Amino acid sequence: MCGIIGFTGLDDAKEALIDGLQSLEYRGYDSAGISFFEGSSDKIDTIKTVGKVSCLADKVEEEGNMETTCGIGHTRWATHGGVTEVNSHPHTAGRVTLIHNGIIENYGELAEELAKEGIKPVSQTDSEIAAMVINYYYDGNPVEAIKNATKRFEGAYGFCIMFKEYPGEIYAIRNGSPLVATHYDGGSVIASDVVALIKYSKDYFVLQEQQIARLTKTDITIQDMDGREIDPEYLHVSWDIAAARKGGYDYFMLKEIHEQPEALQKTIMPRIKDGMPYLLDDGIDDDVFKNCNRVVIAGCGTAMHAGLVGKNMMEKLTRIPVSVEIASEYRYADPIIDDKTLFMCISQSGETADTIAALRLAKEKGAKTISVVNVKGSSIARESDYVLYTHAGPEIAVASTKAYSVQLSCMYLLAFRMAAARKSLVDDEIKELVKLLKKTITDVTKLLKYDSQIENISTMLHKASNLFFIGRGLDYALSCEGSIKLKEISYIHSEAYAAGELKHGTISLITDNVPVIALATQDNVYGKMISNVQEVRSRGASVILITNAGVSVDPALCDHQIMLPKMDDRFAPFGAAIILQYIAYYTAVGRGLNVDQPRNLAKSVTVE
Ligand code: F6R
Image (tube, rainbow, N blue to C red; front, side, top):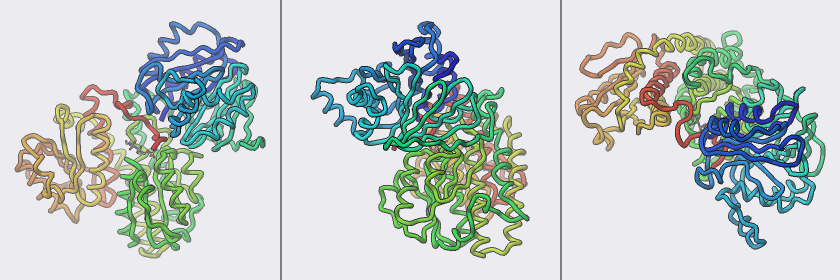
């Protein structure tokens, strides 16, 4: 949420900032802006505009012919204050210019205090108030100003700050919102996401909470709030720049859909030893599973939906009660947690504010915590007792696709290992399941070839204004995922319903030609599911039916049937996910929408 970048080095900073913002644009695209020191002088110029980074690039081309080697840039997802140029970042107050990711919750109170001193903002943003507070405490010493000002801030922040008297230098501090940085031969770079650094170096470090970084073209120094110098721990990214580029695809989302077999391969295969699930290299030993009497899985959106599938598998295989919680609700629900609770959280970014808060609450109450996370060194990964990294590589499209599939695979691996640890299944049964999990990699590869079939079928959805996803058991969990994917990028209202629940109210919304996407991949409820499809069909619904391979249905039952390749029904979610991702993608493309940057959304939700 909000992309931020700072560059100081030997090369043109404007180019570095625009390039960095382009790679961070998925974090917010309401407006964009940069500020930079003119040459080696202490004059700071700011160029900003409403709209995408491409609009900013045009404006910089027109107005920004001055030379610079040090600057900061921001792409905004609006929280406080409308989408206007004055509310765009960077914000300047006196001798301080900053960019901010996060929310200063007590900004109203701070603004009142400043007003009493006659200091008034020009924008409606909490970020400008932050700049004003830092400027208020600034008497020529940047670090002291940052320390004194941040003591007054409540909320989350990642700041990059330039002080007029310090050309060529960028100061940064974080609390909650992520910041990563690297120093390379040509200078120093800091950003909200490693995708903006990879062009310079594959080695980077995560700025830890309440540490202050000072970037110059020759080095980066870090100190904590007590002035102690800190040696950052450098991490290494295993993917390269090509992974963060579209690589010939029309959209990142399509590219990421196609990357699923590789992501699954990288996530599953290193965790299989002698045919059994093996998590010791991740530091997860069997005692973790033996010592719990219940599991809680928390996450948001798609990540939470992966948890719904995880619950189904874990309960079936281990007979341990599992609950799935929406992280933003969980933290305020006074939940029952104790030291026998195994708390799992799922997050692609590892920075989702609500999921972090749920994790902290679970830890505080004594639960052991395992996180399933894609981004190395992210807050959730660092704060959990154990981490099972998904190896999806960078996910740039706002709609999560490959991250979901690998999250599913981790849920299965955890369920299998738990069953082994608790001896709820014998090893041979587990080995059979492991084989089936490996087979999903080839099944998903086959499913990628369904693209043109699904593109054709999706034309029936282009003009829809409402539709339903229905399913039972695992298919209900997949319906939830299919529905969020479709609505977030196609803007068609849709709902996911447990198929048996339709009759309890919702079926009144089914009229002629309302599309219903029905998932019927689960053998134990297949007959019941077909009855539910008949119920909507007889009320005029247009039906797309997703079944297992070789299932023949009465042609009158649906408009289109999409058959999975031959898959064990317990593993059908991996296949159904691809079909549902394609349905969402081709429907949105057919409606002429920007699939990667749906309106109002942003990747990585670092505010509550
Ligand atoms: C939907 C989507 C979101 C995220 C959710 C959690 O396609 O991407 O629902 O799944 O915002 O994000 P992470 O996984 O980063 O915690």
